[in-house]
Image 1: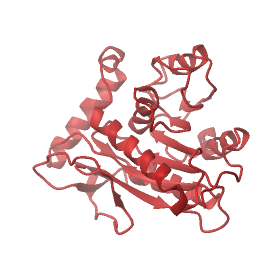
Image 2 (image 1 turned 135 degrees about the vertical axis):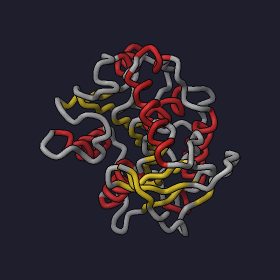
Image 3 (image 1 turned 30 degrees about the horizontal axis):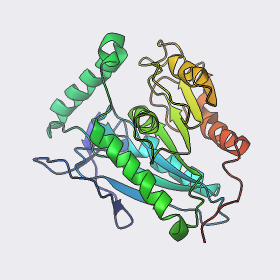
Image 4 (image 1 turned 60 degrees about the vertical axis):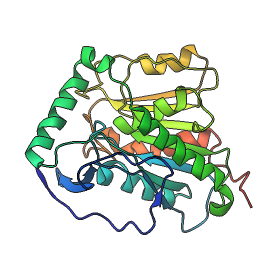
Length: 280
């Protein structure tokens, strides 16, 4: 189930100006279900994945999930970033700080199973909040991209966020928790918790996608979408019949394979991909 993996080259990664989490061990890269992931991240980084052809001027921070104990980079960050860049959207992969886990593989897998079991239990999940230091990392990433818009030829008013599972919940916390000066201009969440949240009148437009058979959040109802509706804010909800949790770019044989195209259509229809306001 789990095997060691080499850390990817990090010469393009930008160290974010947030505090390092005090770990006793080093950051650990590994393979889970054949996909590269990382745990015990003590320092946040941001890696640009920029368009090679014509650019729209829009940017998206991409954040993987993993129960705040790991980040599934090969399933929920790298391919999505490349997909966006191929379509003219500057992508920035966020590697945010994580809760520490045991360095031994067996003990880590046990902790991960316990965390996902708690997420599937509505009573336990209700009291779980995104750690503040992770929100700090996400806001630092958005602030960096926005302040460096001229360097990357971006429109600072079109800086969005795409998150999966825990990465999606991190995006929600970044968007709704005060202060919101570094909130994204638009927010796409894939299989997030569907629990209702407090939403302000300035909350960004929201895209939500999940599968009805998601064992973690498919049974929660649609409180998240309703929170946006009740606040009078734009929201789009996609519920796929099948796909489970963690389908990433899409589960073969299901309509989740159209996820990234649906996100792109939402961005296009919202005017986020129009070439305007590009910093010179």
